[in-house]
Image (cartoon, rainbow, N blue to C red):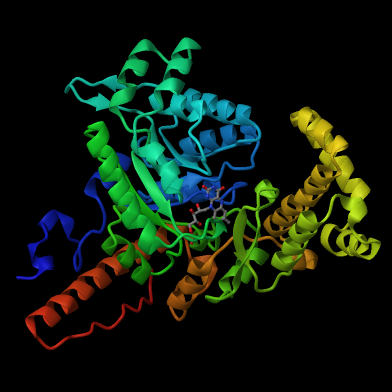
Length: 480
Ligand SMILES: Cc1cc2nc3c(=O)[nH]c(=O)nc-3n(C[C@H](O)[C@H](O)[C@H](O)COP(=O)(O)O)c2cc1C
């Protein structure tokens, strides 16, 4: 008897197993153990979330970089367009520079009864996140503990992941109680739940990346989860997800084989009709091959050397962004940079003079973080970093708006999963990105991954039994 024929009937689709943890599907009310990860500045748009939710697939709205009133209107629009209980969530980005923004977001999420967040970019757990997690925790009629707000943490560092497998930090819980931000009951129950329900191990991905390797990260997170569960005695099993580089059925099948309870995709979902970025950018992404991506500095964490993975083909952004970072590292301030270089930056990168950029930047900081502005006025290096950071905001905006004459400066976050998906979909009805609806991509990936998974197991079992190996033809779809 093969492994496949031993799988329970309810865990099988027509031809292969239904991949992933069934509890993930029931807790999130989704059809697949699959998540479409957030893409900031509304690239993971309202339409994108709505389309996924209606198809029973979990997607997170790209709240990063958007003002709070824009996030509020997105939540209301999504809610109005979907049935109660259909899955959706909001991205909760850590903001070390402006912690008050995390608090504002928590207030909004609680006021709007948003039940699911994708917490990302965390380097340490914050009171705002703990407050979201603990709000409404109670003992239900069946005697079981219920956390009504679900947290999916997306992480690449084990030392940070530890904090999400464990209950919320008691010091933060005590402070929240003291400040009257959580109730006595919520504080008392805090030690019995993990901070996250789901922890997604993010290997090298499009966008911000620590360039980790899935083969090492996913198994390590699983072990860490078990270790911490043994130490804390928590009964809730935190599920482990895999993200980074997933753009084909083979990669998805491999992620489940590696031990993932669910998978999360990113890059491929940007090249879909629903994504909030220009058609010009989508045309460029649809042309990309496996090696058409590069690493550039991350604008939002420019000074600390954080990196993003971006599209290289058809744009000069990665080279220009890296040049700015080198100049930042080697110069004491703008006065240290040769005038010819300044002229090139003004003409080719920024499309305006440094004075105009500084004026705009200073106006922003005067309203949002005046202390940072004062620091920059006194520190030429910080001022240079702020001006250079403007380029990163500008170049993202150019790609989102589709300023075709400015294509050389397009900053498009993406990774090799996109190139792999283009190859996989070549010759199918989804070759044209206009047909690549974000929910259909998910369905195709999960169905074909399941077939591949079953086929791979059959092959391995046949080898084991000494039987001749039958290789199934790859599925070639001609209709959605
Ligand atoms: C255009 C783009 C924007 C992204 N923005 C965010 C974001 O704002 N917040 C976040 O948590 N992840 C963001 N990500 C990461 C994705 O949610 C996902 O984790 C990642 O893309 C998965 O790796 P892959 O691109 O290799 O599939 C972004 C990814 C892309 C491609």
